[in-house]
Image (cartoon, helix red, strand yellow):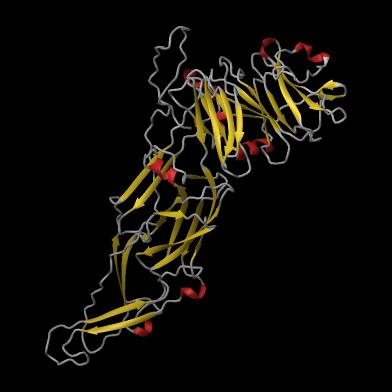
Length: 582
């Protein structure tokens, strides 16, 4: 019986491969070309730490013989001639775009594209399914952004979120002074890269990437291995300098799609006291979702004139073990006054993890009910409601009410009093009107008219209160000029006492490589978000708001590489200048 340590077979190499050594330092198997043969990719290197990749396979005619894959009699090679890139240190096979062909991911931890930088590292993506060619160019390259990190030293993959697109794990075991990091690249984003025409991307440009780190470990991520047990995905991360292995367990991902519409009538009338917004959440689950309750939160926000949400703005709800495919909420909006208005409701579904992070609560134990929401989910919905009449709705419904102050509701005893009052109220149960008028004819007594104005809900749609009195000697002359005219103007003033402005800024970290990539005319955008809330009883419309920002330094922390090789400190002074936003 052969010894298990003896090779089963030695593969004859083509003479053109004799310039390479360390053949087989990394392996990956998959269907890399359109002939769908199962191939074994192996890496080699030559002088100046440049690398290459070749392929071997079992010939159908000689099923027990391994052959080097050739095109036109020459070995099919993937070459990289960049010095000290360490191209081929790691190889990994994964079907990123679910087309039954394997993409080949190649690590080059010594790669550096920036002058003065060193060992930032990179991974090369070679999309599967193309024709067999003697030479092959990469489909895409993802570059690390930290000097000395050796991004691309080890590669693994598994589908964490259950969307059928595997996530890519790439280690940088010498990042952060040798502590090490592992980057999780979302399969959804990597698939988009393969479809784009862009050939190179910085690691920092990934929107949904996640970083795994353990500060007490050294060389964390030197080796990676993913596996599945009982429907749960795991990632093992080796840390040989610490003599430990870290085991990560995945959290299930669900898909959530929000929609929102107005309940009942398609319009809100100006005389309505409330309206109801219906929020529908459609849910999708991965096949291996655990049989446990899931906690989610519906967060709502409202902007509009004198309106508020009757329900809680943060609603907690649980998805039972039956995993419903749809959840519906009715959000009641109360309107403080009648009249025209515009309202905007925003709804967003969040996970227990996201709410805990917002409240600075860090879970200490693994909770199997925790979930994440896939990035491709439509987790936010917006409903804009216009409260303006249209067509036949814009008809006022006026009705007068007369109230006599005398002792008898219908008679008056002459000489029983000096003054009496006839209170006239006009109620409009229809739409607002600006053209209607009321003529009051008084006979039988001299009258003093007191006009009472309801000022409990004024608006700034008019700049002032205007009273105009026209006197006509004869009622028949109303169509001609008045005999006498008197005007009174009361100018409205606005107070900002009950206006509140809340702002938030998003800090950004810029690496030296990103700053060097900027051209002379390039700018860096800094995003600020402001919310203005009116808590007064007065509604503001068409009022211009001016936000003034102080001229501050946007760059708060500067980094400088020490010049001395044996020193970890460097003294530097910064000029007292300010950075202005373009």
